[in-house]
Length: 134
Image (cartoon, rainbow, N blue to C red):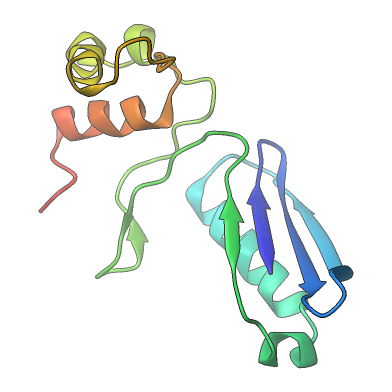
């Protein structure tokens, strides 16, 4: 089972591992860019997978092609911050963007292509504002 959460919606594909043929696919378009909408789309896609396919799932893959970031508390099962979309620019939009970029530069390999649009930097700016680790 593969899930892809993109900019405008989410998709699911189920592939039969015996012959690698797609046996189920579905897509959900987002009405708004909010955490609850993304979680609702996941549940909608899961509910739409036929029971026979669910019983035989071997692997699950999740992709976020939009590069958007959600922080999620595994204990409460709630999002702990709003969505930062793919076009969130750390340097321009985050009060601590320069510090996040400094940390990335310090720990990235020489010649790294990490930029202010990187989801990792988004997480660093969130952590610099209020720790992501409780």
